[in-house]
Image 1 (cartoon, rainbow, N blue to C red):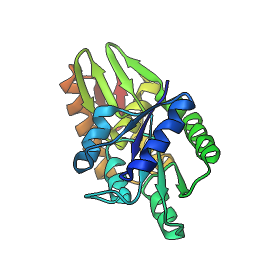
Image 2 (cartoon, rainbow, N blue to C red; image 1 turned 120 degrees about the vertical axis):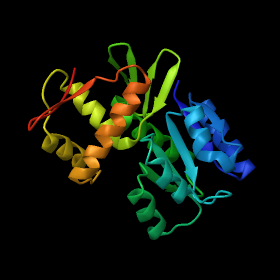
Image 3 (cartoon, rainbow, N blue to C red; image 1 turned 180 degrees about the vertical axis):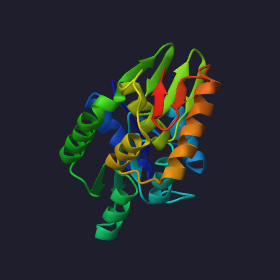
Length: 220
């Protein structure tokens, strides 16, 4: 059962969404702590987030922008403002879809289903030795130890994993990041590789990524 987090401060709307989602075969959770919204998203680990633009403490677009630095969890923006600027900003910040109030419940369910289907392959758990890699949630886990990766770190790790025991050039990694709409320069790639190594070290794999001089990297 897919878990959907509702970030909506209007209690009546949130309750209606809960009832709709529960009756449609989803597990729905309503966010209560808006002040720690990003932290709560990671704690709950939903499969999809319904995020209203007008929420307390921080608007939904800023929250989405911050979230995308660390996670690629699917997000559908919900707003009462029928404004093309909001739609453009939401999509540019990394929203997977956008719907305005009042919405047709059937249309909303279709969009949720489409987003989950489109991102479903990323919801699978990948394995590296004793390490579990949750691609969509941006999490690596070994036993009880769990570490969050940024979107760039996860893209790099996923590419290295797909080419395990083969040398991957820096150009290949840069191209893969560009294909995922992540535009970073050569220096930024070095920083991301270094941070990824540090996080792998936290779960006991300090020598997982080896540098091959003038060739690239290899995941052993």
